[in-house]
Length: 258
Picture (cartoon, one colour):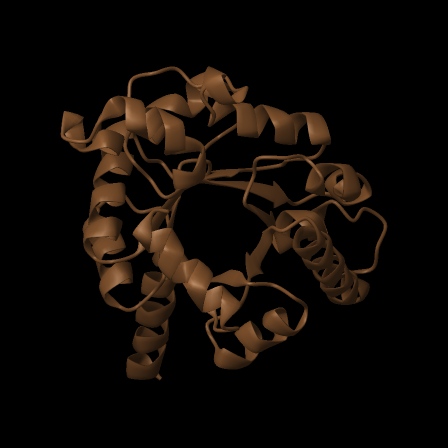
């Protein structure tokens, strides 16, 4: 297995927190800083972030060079939205709004070669170290070299979670609490945190029953991470790059001017 993925799966088996940061800013030095800080993964966001292909590529390089897994969130499950990112050699692909088992299957197929029942086109580049590695050997093991991560972030997905969790070929579910909360139409805001916590427990339990991992979003504190781990969540984002910068600077300016 990919040594970076091996490292984080070993931490999860030991019950240690696996943490990372959402990266939306274009400069790849941000991903390098996240890796050097000791984070286990970088969440490179091409769903909400304004990143072009070259910028995503440089973020993947920077994250991995700094010792972190590079997970790239793509806009959708169509194979043409995924294949060039896969050929960059990331450690994981994150799919947003996996609301049904059929979408989950499409996500897995987009990352899997036809020999394993998928639709991925053959043309690995950095994924085989630009031809230094044997391409045929890579084709045999590629399905296990990259995590397929399915986001559960709507009540539709929650209602279909047993079917989604049982789809073969993915490695982790990920509960997105912000969009999940937005989809709880008619629920009082004060009731949403409790419901989301219950959903995290349920999704984490189903993931474990199917031999998979589960991730979600925590705050930048030990307590927040421990709360999620107590619900069965294995790995978690703890911050977003732009908000780290804006939060620290705005607080500093308030303190200076106060």
